[in-house]
Amino acid sequence: MLPLTPWYDGREQSYLKHYVLSEYLLRFGPIIGSQWRTINYIDSFAGPWEHRDAEYRDTSFGIAVECFREARARVREMFGRDLRVRCRFLEKGKSAFEKLDVYAQSLSDIEARALNTEFEAAVPNLLAFASEPRNAFTFLFVDPKGWSGFSMDVIAPILQLPSSEVLINFMTGHVRRFLEDEKSATSFVRLFGRDIRDEFAGLTGDAREERAIREYMRSVKRTGRFLYVGSAIVFKPEIETPHFHLMYGTRDNKGVKVFKEVEEKLFGVTREVRAVAKERRRVAQTSQASMFAPSDMHKSTALDERRSRYLRMAKARVEQRLVHSSRIEYDKVWRIALAYPLVWESDLKTWIAEWKAAGQLRIPTLTGRRSVPQLERDVLEWIAPG
Image (cartoon, rainbow, N blue to C red; front, side, top):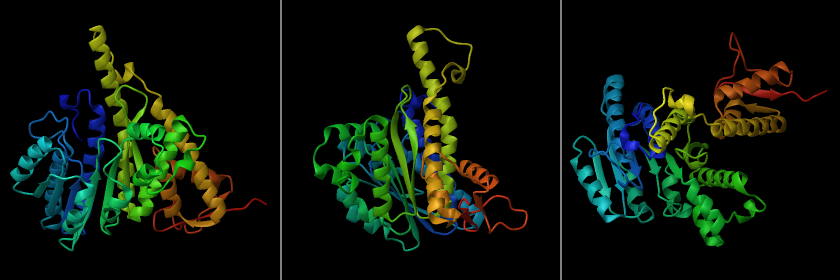
């Protein structure tokens, strides 16, 4: 687990983002290494921006390098062969790039190169990079400071790389302002890949924000031809508002499973991290320490309320699909449910058990002692009333 060090004081949202990245890459590396000989990693807005560690252990690129080192050691232990790791770190700012370049050149065990360029301008270079060697899997991390610099039509060829996954930091706060201020169809097309202004007609607040998130995920899924796109919510450290959504796209159920497991762990970690941040602010304001743990002093209901709402939405969507399809693979229902934030497989299995007990659903493919459906094995049948 990524340690919560003083490097992240006041920037706990960065810690939670890095937590997701590190937890996923630690699982991703050995899984990919079991089938591919090479991992290509692209950090498209690498920085460094607000790092405090001289060795860059609180940056996305530094964390990725350490995760890949551990993955390579595990692949060597498990499969008796070396995993090749190739990296491209992009940064358009001159001063930040100079630091990034020094770091990349210091790596002797990983093939890394820093590029002083904008992400959109580098797409042809990155496509050439990702096409070599042939037996390689590419992971793209898109972590901008705002909502520009990664137009859907420009980055489409990267998203469409056949053996690839993507993690995009959708800066919810910035996009919230974009939705309020932008009137140009061109701006919407650049960000979402199409003019979606009519989708927001009459919507305000959370409903407007959540529609934007769903529409962006839909665009990423369609543009990249992904099997699944989901998101994990990262809140501001001391405010009950989402700061950004980490959107993940994959073409494999294994990736979905790992991402959702990481998101479920993030749910608990977020409570602890935000409680620590709130307690630090309280102590700074009052100069009085407490005998109670931060998690006991500062309880937050925002995450629980969102989870309850997403559970209702996901359950209704799954039931709608079951009724409409009558017979459907468990895999498809599973991906529908898990596309919602804060909804996990255990929730889906609870609903299935309820519907079975009520005589509304059956699983004709269950055999032997199995009592719950499995991926790539079972189908669900909805039983029409009467």
